[in-house]
Length: 547
Image (cartoon, rainbow, N blue to C red):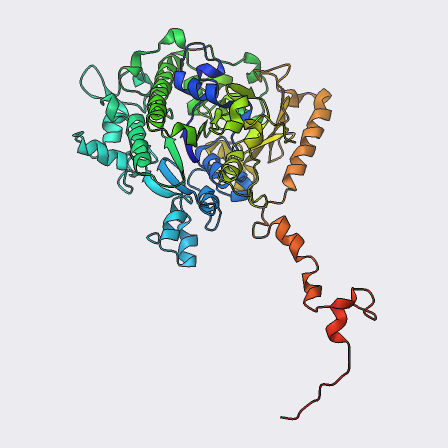
């Protein structure tokens, strides 16, 4: 049995036809959902790329692994999917994006060379890297592109795209009416086709790399195929640039009442440049059709992967997981991008196809359990035949749900957001340790706690599924707030850092010192079994011999 772990960057949970989108038809996502289980209440551990991905890869909450923002290194020694699966005889490969930054200082301190096998895996988030490309090869006055190497850019150069940075000049740019570059960084260009053949664009490129990997793969493997899209820049090659138009743009989920005395953190975010842009309907009417086109291209390429699995007889021995690292506000709640804890941002798609016969009873079903992204690591370990190291992995295996069981499950989901590097933290006058947010969601009530002395936000998704009315301003809801703070406190007391000894290890240690003859605090020896003192009783026959 193999695992095909596919992640799309910034894919909203509700921009799939199987999730109810009225205009965007995604038959291949639907195809996997029809063969597996679609989890309707799955949440990212953090609504920012790097922190979310590190939680997927470690199976641990963001505050446990510590890499809570893009560019925060994942510390040396943090165990990842690769470590857990390799111990079960399953290789673990990376194809595409991780957003992981290596702990170079930690590696140097321990004498780990990036060229060694262990060092390379530490630098690649525990994976063996088949081909890594994190995308976003920008080119600003301070550089960025030149100090890194992009396999995708090298591919484009080999295909004749003549540029030092064809990612920026072709794959993520169109051409305006005057023959000039129309960069995808500008929303006004989102309706133009990217100046690249569709077959050479990012999503088909990675699809082909995935097929090349599977063609040569032997034994058991987990392949993390991590697509760069539909993440911005919002520009897509023909014919996808014109598949959707303004008529397909859903009305923004926002309400004027949200702007009335907003929570200070929310208020800071709705004033930033991204949000101000998405508050303009002309921006949404250009960007969202491009975003939908990118998703449609992802779906078509998924179809190519699925066809390949069927044609090569691999479908019946490959678990398929489709998910995303976070969502995209797209103007909902007066916001752009991600960052906060409304559903468009923190809720993620999660579809799992389990090829085993035991999962036949759940095919084509949905599951409403509160699922967290860290649950995948535990799921993969159990699927690989291992025992879940619960003292390290903080998630729970989803396999019981896949075979129709109803396990004892969590009462609430948690997400975290450290926004200390942002201008919003500066605007609010916060020190880095106070620029932190926590979400607690019990299936009905969703609370956001903000460090720094702010009041909480609270939404009742049963009565207010669109999350318009912030009940945190209302004293009548204090009971619910106190209850959710109780959950947050319970979660905060979890055992998160004792990762070198399992509970079973500790139980086996109990009493072992006694059996080794360490017997302090005995009055006469009758307090313990006689066998423990046997070697300390008898005739004193030993003699002292002067050297």
